[in-house]
Image 1 (cartoon, rainbow, N blue to C red):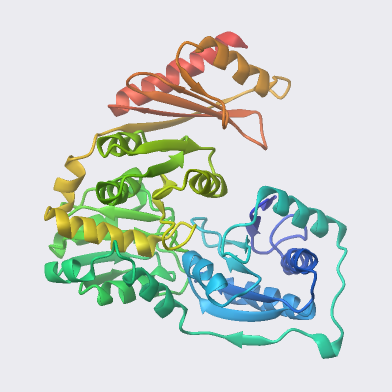
Image 2: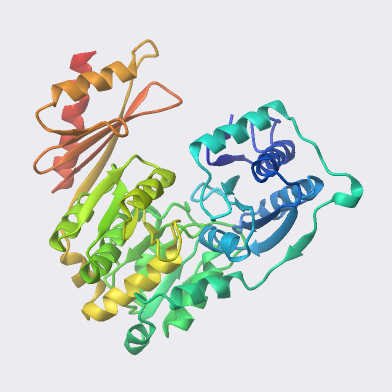
Length: 460
């Protein structure tokens, strides 16, 4: 079964049986539920929604199903076609729309697709609202429009231009400083829409782009999650081309990874760290990431006499805390940059522009920049439990075991030791505790994970 319904949308693999996979009927049902929910929220039938998609093979089909369904409800559709998640988020308020749907399964392989749901601000709908949409889908309580009231359909081809111009207009983006450097950059866009949008931005910033996997045909040449083990080709090409660095984005362009001039990974966690370093150097404020992100962001914030706070895992949770604390910068350790002066969503395009500004002003190579940040290493493990074990009770016991340390229970249990930390989160679907660790060496991070597993076993 590969259909996952969550508060942020629905995703699954294409084909198969209704209710088990993301079939045409499932797409129609979920689009109907979201459209119906929005109509009730706005207390009107005549809404406008923004639609955009990544370059997945199934994208055109899913787009047709969603568009026709919304029109069938009497909702007007503005179709951006091939787009990025942050671009759709930008365009919802730009066009005074009532919401939006992004058709992308993010970093999942090509057989996956998804509907991600936005409100009128271009932000992901809340957990409470998502639950209401799921309930509507379950009950299939839909009322479609009569023939004279069907929704209108139009396309727009200027969304990337609008998005990029808004980035260039940001005071903290110094296009002239970047142009003076004439950077040569290799781009791996995993044959999705980053291959369209990122070169447009880099051209405006006076950079030369060497394209690798930039044909938006949805045939991902490697696992689309931008992790080191998937990125050997760009690491080699950066060296071969004598480039200044490499840029890697996922299929919907909300995650940004970097490769230094030596062909070494900058580290997904450090994309946010570098951008925060630049912004907090110029404006004291608050930085936010989630509990499973690197301690390096906290360290950098402290060097600039700024505050750092951690949210529960999940983009919606990060955004909520950013609003509460009026944060200057936030994001997630997976390369997700959220810059509220532009919008409250992970955005690789603004991440590239801010990183380039920082690099130009520091007058360093990418490897020299990275060497200036504290080095941490992360470990990820899990412990599988038998179904009769109460995971919540087990986490409570762990909290008590380490009560003399700095402990957070915002999301599972996170224990901060002097030189490292461990974060324990339970799976919502199976009896598993996921164990994230971070320390000053990989060996130390892995050893800490093993010790915590032994401690958990001793408490069972």
